[in-house]
Length: 433
Ligand code: EPU
Image (cartoon, rainbow, N blue to C red; front, side, top):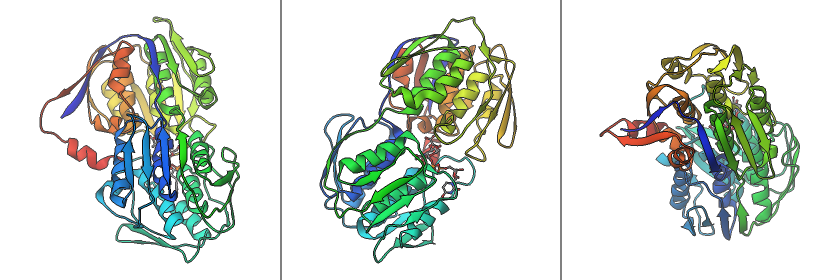
């Protein structure tokens, strides 16, 4: 079993460069199915979720060629099937983007229902509502989403909730539909804007991404081009929180400061020093100075991101006083709390609220990552904790963080990977998404 072994406590110092955005990449890669021509995509993160999507694309008949570690040329001209029902599809959440992309390209799609991190029920009813509004018939047959339309036609869509996946999936289906689609109550996350910019660079006509009304004028063909993915907001935020929690001084390069505002604001409240520059941020805290308690509620962008909730809660285990963290997006995103308790954290969960009583120190322990962000939070905890922490389930962390060991190592963390033989990794692999 592969494990991370981390010694602590250490302070973090130095600089780290943020990779391309995972949640932008995992939408842009399926979106290439809509394009007849070559898409050259730069700043593609080298993470296992992306590798899985490339496998799915190849299985659909796309030509995928890496021009460098993070630049890939994808040509979907020869893709001739609308059926994506194989194991890789079921292993990740973002594979649902193949529904919108295949529907947009062929007017038909058959895609296995997605897997993904387990935060409670994660339905795709709003995606389906959107496809239906565009004229598709959609059914779920034996675990496969079966969608087809005589002709996709632009329409006005009003999702019941603000949903990232729904907004992107409707955009994908609508770019080649006949006429105009208007998505109201749209999500505004940076990766929504990035997917729209990518599609526009390939020839689409999308306006308003980043606001809550997106207007899409259907176009006959998308023909290819070059595009660079934005930096990963959550990866950047993770290193910011790690620096604030451990103490020290860390420069985080290749960021878009605007995307970091809610995270920077909360970290400032904790007492960490945040200095923002054009494309980097410095986070520092004198070791020995204490962290202030803060209350956090996760919300759709521009609110505090749910994907930073476990990292922030981890930091607050070491703050002075009682902090209250409220999860505003998912029903069950506090499963990792049991692991932090093993390390000495005082946390009580009641539904979507976690009450955190700050402690003076965490202690190393054997813990297990239960999902991507929970897993990375255990790394943050381990760096701050006294003694040795052994983290298993690390495949889940590598779904979304490029070179995480090297990056933390370069900041001074005592972190290494061991493989102690046959394992449950295969089991974890099945759960990835
Ligand atoms: N929801 C529905 N019905 C739907 C769609 C969503 O009820 O049809 C609910 C969800 O269950 C959830 C809420 O709406 O309670 C918001 O979900 P959303 O659709 O916004 O999330 P998602 O598209 O499934 C993406 C990211 C997640 C991130 C969320 C929120 C990808 C592949 N995943 O998920 O990322 O937490 O947006 O920002 O982009 C992660 O990176 O660790 C991660 C989990």
